[in-house]
Structures are given as structure tokens and as C-alpha cells.
Length: 494
Image (tube, one colour):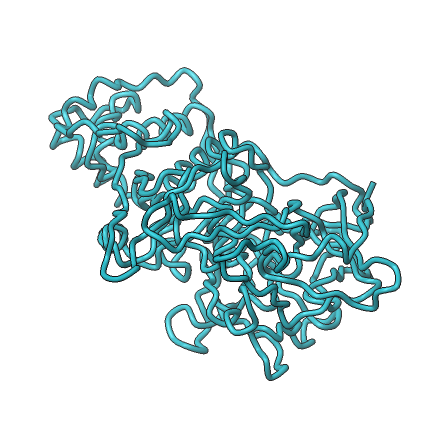
């Protein structure tokens, strides 16, 4: 507290402003405190601070401390003080951002390289050519400076936006109509917008700031309205929810933004909080632990195998039996030797995150089991301190007569749909199986599509659409796809 006060006082003196007892007189110091390099970003940051002061706030911090700030509804800051900062005006030409954020254009290059190579995205015409179904939340695992250096490299990959940690400043790199190379899954790339957040998943307190959450939530809400994307966890997904395309790619899939990303707070800021929509004993649940109260022990934040500092988490751990000493459930894609999942901060094999929805497989006092990667997965869920909310919706099960069905990491067309000259893309099942008697929550309906984009000139690109239809399901920590012809749909929790 004293350190923060000293920093604000130093800024106030630098700006030639009095050390007043009236918080309205500190607008300039608050704007400067952000470290912003332009007037718009400084103004958004200060505006958010004063908005909180007016409304008041009561919240438990990531470290578990309860903070209460009384409301001051009549507080009117002296916004004219921003002129004392001497910051330049932000150039906003060509950006796709809401007016409530500070956003600039830092274009990713689209250049012809040697041979057939080009970088670092594909020119397209979405949503006219293809519907955008997903917004993928990433973290950079690097600093702002490093990230912007990478996005300017025509031989590297790309993403649509980057958000700065300190002040929530946004840079747009690829128009939403174009296809960025960010998800590690070509089908998801073609159907998504990717947003990078400056930071490291194992260091949430240092990087996952309130300013970044707020700016990101405004951007996602804006894009969801523009692209007609539902604000739910079937469509707003983490990079750690993107499935591998084949068995061999599963171990290398990314794990950001990780178990410390506060999905509950994020969706509250978007105006779409997770709430109970069914009875506490319905056949479907929404994962919703209290972030600050749940501090599962993770390992590997600093050194392999070493316990991470206890910290709030939006994820719950999944066991093979309703006991804390039971092994964690298996993910044979991540651990092909059949060994259990681990508490590693990057091991997603036995993890369910806030907002994800699952079909209930069983219940006993204090525990709930859900269907997860083809098995029963148990998590603590006592009635006096629940970690899940009752929900209703649609689930899929194998159609009658099928003992099990395959699951896929992409929704590609059948081979008959490909025209001459376009290589047929294999529809390869993942190593998991969905057995009769199990149920999984249905997300998007996905007509089979493949974007063939292997040339620099967009005129050479083709979109191949097949007769097969797929359903996106919440299968494990990551989503997956099943063929509509393999399943039947039923309602759950109504």
C-alpha cells in the first residue's frame, strides 16, 4: 500500500500537481502510473480505475486476501490533467476494436518468400467465405517487445491481436477476415480469431493484470457480436482447449493460458457470468470453483517437479475414484504408456476448467463424476462448497447399435468431396474412444470444411465442403469432434 502511494505521489509531483486528499485530483498520476505510451491507453487505464472507485468493489485477491472498497458514486476526476503527460495520440486507422479500448495497428507481413513459402497468414474473406466459430485465448510466453518482434517476422506464425499486460493496450496484426496461424490446428485456424496476452502462465500475478482482463473482455465481447459467436466456453476457448489433429500431435499441443487464468472473472467482465441453469442434481454441470478458494498444488512453475507457490485456480483436478489419494485420470494421448496424468502445471490430462460443461456420470456425497476422455472422472463437489453448477443443454451419445465411436481433432470432409488437384486430407481418429452409455456436452455444429490455402495468391485458395456434419463436444480438457451420423442428441438437465 505504501509502495503504491509513493509511486502515485512521485507521478503527482512530476506533473506539478498537489498532493490532495481529493481522489478527483489524482487522475493525471493514475494515468501516468499505467506506463502507457499514448494518450488513449493512459485514458482507458485511468477511466477503469475511476470506474471501480465510483462503483466500489469487494473481491478476494489471487493471493486470498479480502479487499473491500466503498463506492464513491459522485466521484468526477479531473480528466484535463491528462494533457500534462505529454503523450502522443494513438493512430487507430484500420483496427477492428471497440471504442472502449486503446488499439493500434501493427500489421503482420504478407510476403512472398523463397520457393512456395509465404508468411505469415492467409488472405481470406471471413465470415462471407467461412463462418468464424471460435475465439482462442492465448498467452505469449514472452514479453510484449519479443511478441511484436515475432509478429513482424514473415517466416514466423501469426495471430490476430496482442494485449499488453501493464495497461491493456491492444495491437491488431491480422484482420479478422483473414486466417492467422495461431492454434496449432489448421481446422481451428480457419474457423477462429486468436488473441495473445502478454505473459507467462506460471507467473499469473506478474502478468495477468486487471487492465489486461478488462481490455481483453471488451475486445472479445465486441468480436463475438460482430462475428455472431456465442459467449460460452464451447466457443471462447483457451489455446489449451484446442485439440491435436492426430495422435502424434497431441503431446505437443500448447497449454496456455493455463490453470491460473481466471475464466469466471473474464466472463463476468464480458457480461456473461456463469450461473446455474439447472438443478444441483441435474445430469449436466458447469465447472465453477471459487477461484481464490481453490488452490490445487501444481508443479513445474519454476523447476520440473518442484511445487508451485499456492495460488487460486479456475480448474478442478479429476480422479479415477472419489478419493483425494486416488490416481488422476488418464489421457492416453498425452501419456501413451498408460500412466496417470500428473499435477504438472502444463499437464492438461486431468483438468476441468471454469465454464466447461460435462455430462454427469455418477454422484456420491461430496463428489461428482463426469464423462471425460471416455472414462468416469471424479472431482470434489460438496453441497456446502460446490465446485460445479447445475446446467441444462444438449448432449450426444453413440447412436443405438454402436458400442463405441471415434473422436476427431478436426472436422474435415469425406474424400469424395475433394475436387481434382486438391490433396485429400485424412480424416484420422484420435486415440480416444467414446463408448455406449457415455454422454458429452454438445457445442457447435460443424459442417465439414477444409481450407486449401497453399499459394501466395488468394485466388488459388479453395474451400472444400463435404456432406459429413460434425459436432463439437467437450471431451476432455480439450474439445473434440464427432460425426453427426455416429451419434444421437438428447436434452439433459431440463
